[in-house]
Image 1 (cartoon, rainbow, N blue to C red):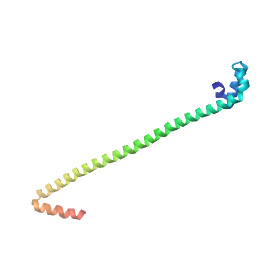
Image 2 (cartoon, rainbow, N blue to C red):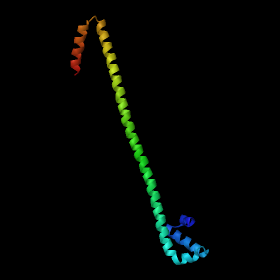
Image 3 (cartoon, rainbow, N blue to C red):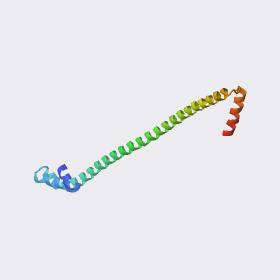
Image 4 (cartoon, rainbow, N blue to C red):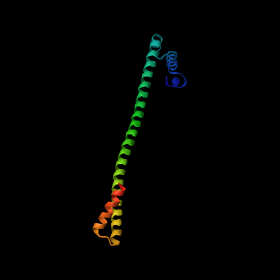
Length: 128
């Protein structure tokens, strides 16, 4: 039947296989009496097997797609969280570095601690 199925639609392939069996005396009496029933049963069974296989493959494809989407979402979330954390740390480090450099520059100009403090507070208020 598989050979016939390659060349013909399913139902025709089954009919051809049944006819072949009758001609070759393979269960000929059985097929002569029950040919229509056998054809109907095999057509339904084959169709059911095809439907199950299609559903299984479709389910696998959907599962893979969903897994990829979920993985990408989680990866992006994790990446963003780590990126923000790293950025925050680097921002704090750069801010401290700039602040220290600014304070050293003011100290080099001969300003006292209190004068530097007032100047930094004044400039901080301007920025906010």
